[in-house]
Amino acid sequence: MAEGLLAGKRGVITGVANERSIAWGCAKRCAEEGATLAFSYLGEAQEKRLAKLTADMDGALRVPCDVTRDEEIEAFFDSVKSAWGQVDFLVHSVAYADRNDLMGRFVDTSRGNFHMTLDISAYSLVALARAAEPLFPGQGGSIVAMTFYGAEKVVPHYNVMGVAKATLEASARYLAVDMGAKGVRVNCISAGPVKTLAASAIPSFRRMLAVNERNAPMGRNIVADDVAGASLYLLSDLSSAVTGEVLHVDSGYNILGGFELPELA
Ligand code: NAD
Image 1: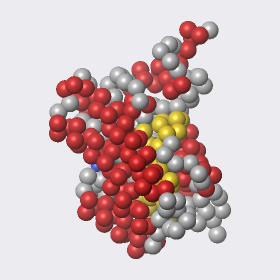
Image 2: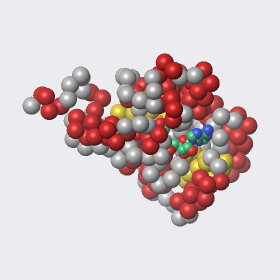
Image 3: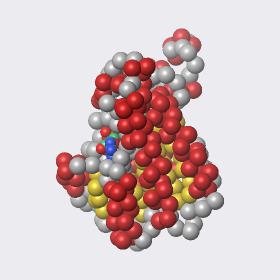
């Protein structure tokens, strides 16, 4: 019998592209705490990487799912249902924007790219939550989605992704209301910058890391394991009455006003 904060629980993890993915940090932590996991993947290359990463994870499922395709979302949860019957938690860790839209001015975002970015990065939370809902057991469940400070304030180059993250956060609040009566909680983690595949699409990402490190109250950047710890709290019964929240895991960067921290000294 597995032990830990998630012993006996079963969870869906989206968005593991490689070992640097934030979702992979969360998955490792969940597995250490006794959870059995179902991973979605996008494409053959990701499937191979995921197979290697999860080789030692007992009972791990790997099922394809492009979140822009309703039929793939349905097939994903059909597979999970026939394997387990129910699901206790879901980690949404998926985002995409055309690199060109992160280069120039937000005002130049095309209609098509605006729709695509919000579809993949925000609507997918709604679609996945709806598909997962019937599988949550009577005693409830937990959904956690990854967001970024660019949802709240203008962050250079974040552009349309900032608008998508604002939509993601608002969607999480509406979902929290829809699902609250069933005991399903929906929260976001607003992570500080972490060097991942998705992050490499953001121009001047290295500068973002340097600015965060220099100014964050804790004087350091975060790592995926910091997010993993917070996700464990939100996915487990430790946060049993917490829903609709955005939990910042950013070494405190978001609490600052318009100054650089050394100016305070
Ligand atoms: P990552 O590249 O490892 O993960 C992004 C994932 O999105 C990949 O697995 C990719 O396959 C998946 N994806 C993209 N389009 C998809 C589609 N149509 N269907 C299914 N999956 C799709 O990068 P990451 O940084 O770990 O990103 C994970 C989440 O964390 C994202 O929501 C991102 O915005 C968020 N986030 C990242 C940072 C950071 O600095 N890295 C900070 C805050 C929030």
